[in-house]
Image 1 (cartoon, helix red, strand yellow):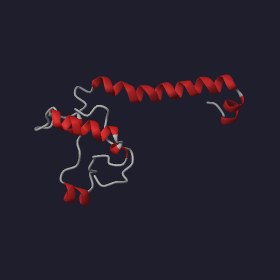
Image 2 (tube, rainbow, N blue to C red):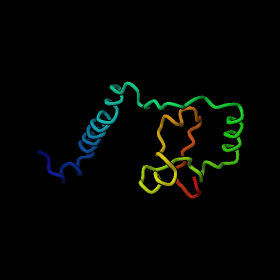
Image 3 (tube, helix red, strand yellow):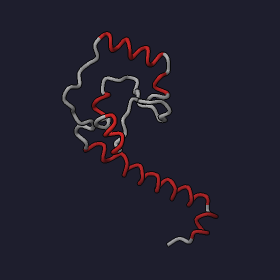
Image 4 (cartoon, helix red, strand yellow):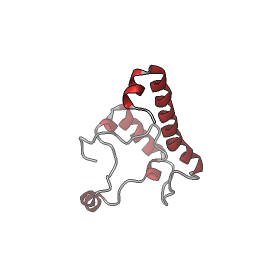
Length: 108
């Protein structure tokens, strides 16, 4: 089809093929989202927060606690034994903004 060198030396062809590859990749990522009925599984026992819990959450956010304490139990065997079942997306459906941190430096 095309030699690698001919693609690299022709800027127009490189741009067209790059856009084509990004378009195909984007479609592969985006199209399945239209076929998901309920992306978050429902969990029994999840309820809206009480006023006291909302006050605690506001303090937790204001002080920046979520930056170190992600409030997320990972799906590993040792953490499952120590903390109970791992965190599910439905358990944090009333958390806005989202509270899971990207780094875990403090105990959860």
